[in-house]
Length: 150
Image 1 (cartoon, rainbow, N blue to C red):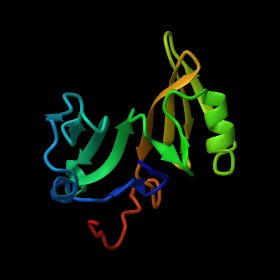
Image 2: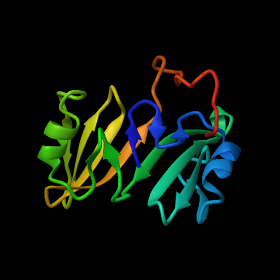
Image 3: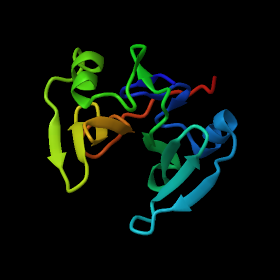
Image 4: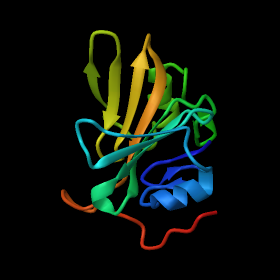
């Protein structure tokens, strides 16, 4: 399952409409609306270990994803359950140079705003990755002009 910064994941692309996601992945195992933000719909695919966020206020387009799929790769290098410093250096070293690190009681996040990538880390290992759709400016997403389901 190949990560594509600013594009999506494998054959799932940012800006895809909810119907297109169903045509590509089938129906999700779970669908729920965000209790705190009624504009978000979450589609969960258990087998793939992916949660996709659909934005109602953006015509039901895919705008965010989170995955802990153990087969997640970028440039053919695995990310999940790997040492976070190795992932930042060897996997993303040519792409991202300044990571913003936030430490919490039991985990940390290592993020980059330009590519809207967040590595969630426990015990020094990447446990999941979050990826958001690219922005055109501070108010608009940079949705693709045409989307094709392959």
